[in-house]
Picture 1: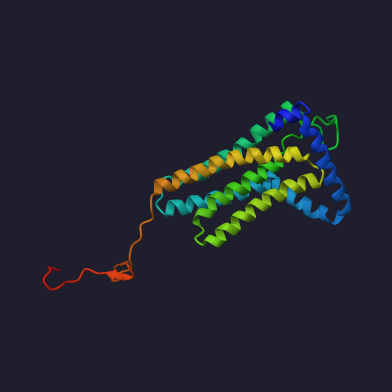
Picture 2: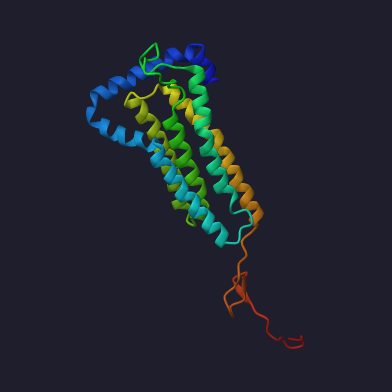
Length: 229
């Protein structure tokens, strides 16, 4: 829907100009934030995003294999495939839409394919989101899992906002890439669910001599009068 709006200059494009103008005014009024915006924008670079995802994939693979999970390889493979899809989709849509730079009505003479959707936004969102999906299942504490999940969402959102703040992309460029990332991360999440179902419930081995706790008491195999041991 967003691609159709941008390629056909639909009603959302007028709103895009308005939102871009707000970002431009805010950026001009707070020049001290440009450094932070640039640092966040750099998280969308392949040199940063791919190593982050590879580290999370290696961690998940090692932990899953050590835990004896039969499909330990599936979530890391799905995450890698999602990242590989990003440049294919982004590059194809950019060439087809050929959207000018933010605030411009024509592409520049430098031969750049276009700005819709945002490659940096999609790359960072997929890398951060997939890394979180790979690591979070191994985090035991619920509060920590929620905190890390929220931090991943906020960081991915901050990267997209920073790209608009710095004037690298239109708001719709970023929004479209978030949609793409959401679709790809859904596939990564589905792979994680399938892997955990294949692993089954975790077996719990009681401590030696303690038996298993049922109803607050330990079940032990002892002789009872009138009953064979």
